[in-house]
Image (cartoon, rainbow, N blue to C red; front, top):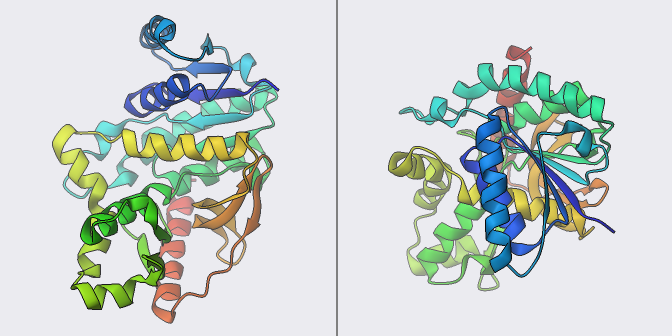
Length: 306
């Protein structure tokens, strides 16, 4: 079966997503779309120049929405990251610009006849995911934002460094908005086969600082290079591969939760048909409060965006 992925928006993030897909041979066909025709054409040629030195081949199609009709996955990486390069790290600074772009792109996606899985990276991702779902008419289970898949990775990186273990040996989730109201649900975090809170006491680990490191990770990267791309690209490619492989993997992604009436990040089983099952975590009272507060914030921002 031919594996086909579309990437809309070939800025820093879109480039990184495409590079990972092409270098690792994750797709047979890759559709690259960007308003800057010279830029996307140059990217395509650059990738084709790389292929003789790679172990796999990828067919690249440029700026043809019609080619998305039979795509398995579309990744929306459009945006204007410079707008978020501000002291508050406010992802909502992009919303007025991205809202207009999303409406136009969603119409083109719908006109193509696409019926696969749509993965928005575009910030503010929870709001944008909701806008994409409404504008395309795709089932809610088929529109999945990367959400706190990145924030959870940042938490694992910080915990791993604090304990001297590989971050892949840390399990657990950051929940809620991919933004300032997200939080680490410490009740879900285990490492070295022990609850993190037990280890934190024994090894003088500052969980508040780790939570802040996870929450502020994007700001630290922005301060150094004025954009982020590798971490979120890895999250998007992982999510796309889980869909392509029908892996039925549990991931903390932005999915529509009926009990909150909005998209937010909460672990769900993901496969070829999108969100297959939603988990029900046993959170603490404090964590449930934080999640509700985050959900209310997202809901309010969605209303403001219309």
